[in-house]
Amino acid sequence: MAVSWGSVTYEDVTVIFTQEEWALLNPSQKKLYRDVMCENFRNFLSIEKIQEHSTKEQHNLPGSKQRNTAVKISEGKESQNGHKSKEYEVYNKLFTYCNHLDQHERTHSGQKPYECKLCSKTFSHSSSLRTHERIHSGKKPYECKLCSKTFGHSSSLRTHERIHSGEKPYECNLCSITFRQSGTLRLHKRIHSGEKPYVCKLCSKTFSRSSSLRRHERTHCGEKPYKCKQCSKTFNRSSHLQTHKRIHSGEKPYECKLCSKTFSHSSSLQRHERIHSGEKPYECKLCSKTFRDSSSLRTHERIHSGEKPIECKQCSKTFSCSRSLRRHKRTHSGEKPYECKLCSKTFRQSSNLQEHERTHSGAKSYECKQCCKTFSSHSLRKHE
Image (tube, rainbow, N blue to C red; front, top):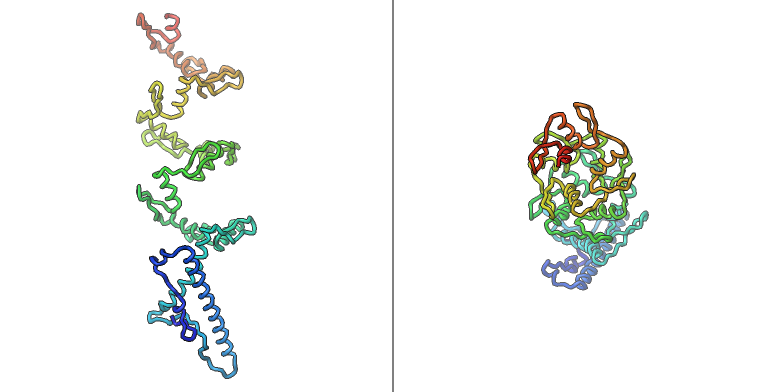
């Protein structure tokens, strides 16, 4: 460019490497190049300031005329299309390169010279510090023009705007699912790779997401930070709290397409749909009996193991499932919730009601295996 000092131009002291040439340099050579080029650039900036100061003085002298000084720094001639000359572009790129190289090298050295005065957190870039300080000040200068929501980062605003536009520019090259954020795509790829970089220090269980690890750690410490404002019940996940709130609101957003029955949980709908399909995907490994849901299988497996983890607080009797405990509790309370519609007699268990109803209908569904005579359940036992 037309940058000169006498017969010396800035190009005379500038060396621009190609990408291939740059790759051949070792780290110390790259550092030396950076230091020399940045020093040259600073020197030319100093000369430019001298030139500007000298020009101003000439304007202030009585009767003086504007003239070129011995040292001249120009930003390059205007080309015919109004753009700066190619030499100025090289000059500008070198300054940008030196500045960015300084910042980039901090990623290798770990140097973080910019410190937050409020929380002492350190950063490698001044711009990162300024962005961080908005956490303390609450400043959110970036506003969405469509919904007026504000953000502390310009990148957060750009990501948010994709909600309105529907844009999902990040695509998984394995399954073609698209995402709004590059970070979400990186997390998704762990499904394919099986990568689980987050390890629980207490039980060594691994997770693909840091948020999943934090939720898991609450199972060890018993922390339940999400509290229902209506009944004060606490939960270790915000999603569990949202689902729980439907008990109070009566909301049941999940509907069966076959019978229109509604449910408050998606998992409840999935279990219900198996009634229609007859699907029983959970199989006992010991007796091959199948079940519609995993909880029914776990309860059944206690028959084989003899485990009875549920205890009555009044008499300490133990049971294999909560349903058996609920039936047992009626012996203490005297509750008999099952009533015969014909004679109003009440029973503690639905099975007892069903057996009683046969006395009205005359049904005898129990057959003696020796003589084939039929009886009600109680009469068969006496007959045998």
